[in-house]
Image 1 (spheres, helix red, strand yellow):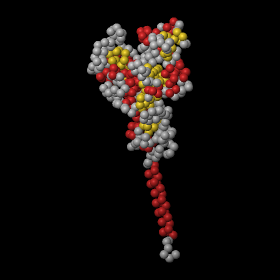
Image 2 (cartoon, one colour):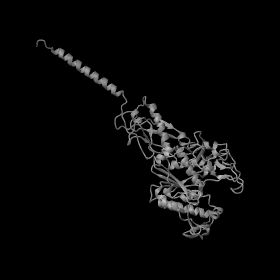
Image 3 (cartoon, one colour):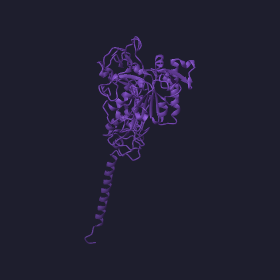
Length: 492
C-alpha cells in the first residue's frame, strides 16, 4: 500500500514496544522489592537480641542479678532501618510501664504510652510499616505481646531512699487540713531531712502518687478511714497530698451526710468528710479508737459506763459500709488498761459482759476484736463487691528510757540510724496478718518500714515550746504517714 508501513518496519516497532514494556516492569518491581513494606495482618517480630535491661524499673535488689525482657513481633524478621532508634526508645518506655502496671500498654498518636491502668491486657494495632506500627495504636489491637517474669510485689519490703523531690506538700502550708500539733515546720524543730525520704519497694516500682491521678482513680467514689488518731493522721496526710498543701475553697464539707457534726459540749466532731466536686471524690475519717461498737450501759446516766462490744463493728461502719468504695481500718494504741478505765469501757461479748478469761486480757481482747471486725467486713464484701477493704497494721511507737508517762523520749534526729531496709517477707504485726489471712480484706502493712523512722515523730517539739511529755507515737507531717498513703494508692 502506498504511503503505508512495510512489514519489516511494523515488526521493529512491535519489538521495541515489547522491550520497553519489559524494562519498565523490571524497574517497577525493583523499586517495590527495595521498600520494606509490611503486608496487612502480618505479625511483627523484633530480633531476639533486641533486649532492654532496666533494673531501676524493678527497684534496687529485685532478688535477681538483672531483669531482661524482649518485645517480640512474631512472624518473619523485618529489617530495622532508620526507624530502629524509635523502636528501641518506645520499647524502653514499654518495659518501664509494664514493670509498674503489669499490663500491656497502648500508645497515643505521638507514640506516648496511654494510661490503660484500668485494663488487664492490651496490644498494638497492626499497621503497614514499622514506624506506624510503633507510633499509633488502636483501642483493640492484637499483635504485640510482652513476655515478662515478675516476682510478687511486696510493697512492705524495700528500703528508704533520699528523694529531693519530696515532700509532696509544704509543712508550712496545708492549714486547711493539717492539725497544727502535727505540723512540725511550725514548731522549733530545725532538722527536716526526714521529709526527703521516699520508700522504694524491693521487687517492683511503686506508682508515683499525684493528686490528679488519685482523684481520677477515685472518681465518684468514697474512701473512709476508720480508727484511732493515727488513722486521723493518715486522713490529714492524704488531704494534703491530694491538694499539694494548697487551699481548696471549692472542696465541700459533707460531714452532715454521715452525721459527722460537732455536738453540743464536745470539743470536736467524731470525724470529718470532704468532697472534691470536680470528680465527686469523698474522703472521710471516723474516730473509733477500739474499732468496736460502743453503747452506753445506762443511757439516762451521764456518768454511765460504756459497753465495749468486742464482737460488733462500730455502728458507723456497719451503717455506711455500702456507701464506701475503699475503707481503711486500724486500732491498737488505745488497748491498755489505763485507757479502758479512763473511758469507762466494759468488755462485752454476745451482748453481755465478757466472762471468757482468754479474752479478758488486754492482748486477748484486742486480737479477738480485730479478728471479729475483719471477719464481719469479709462477710459483707460479697454483698458489696465494689468495696475494697484494708486493715492497716500497727504504727510503731519509739519511746526510749521509759514510756509516755514515765519520761520516755525520742530525741533522735538522724534519719535511718537504725537501718534503712526491710528484708522480711512477713509482717511485723503478726496479729494483723493473722486476722486478714484467708479473707478478702487486704493488709496495709506499714509496721516494719515505719519502725526504721524513729526520727520522724513529733517528739518534744510543739508550737508553744512548753516542756512536758514527748510525743513518740504521732508523726510529723509531712512525713511517714504520706508513705502509708502511697502504698494504699498503689493497691487501689
